[in-house]
Amino acid sequence: MFVISSHIIEAAGQLSKNSNIDFWYLPTRMNGNVPEYPYTLQPGVTDDRHGMIIIRNEGILDILKNGKKPINVTQ
Image (cartoon, rainbow, N blue to C red):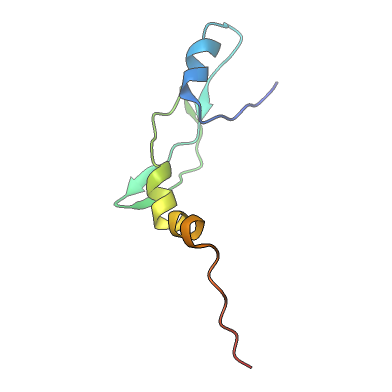
């Protein structure tokens, strides 16, 4: 048994031509702008497209643009 994880959905189209490959995924459910993870495998290929919402929620674009913010340490 091998497990391969990819966010490249196009790979599933090519790989599905092989009868010895099964597809399973862990779904992400959105509660407004907050992702929820049920951690239950589902058969098939996910069509989730929540990556940018998670990136925005975590402020990753700002970090990439401005760099890491300095930590204010008082002594």
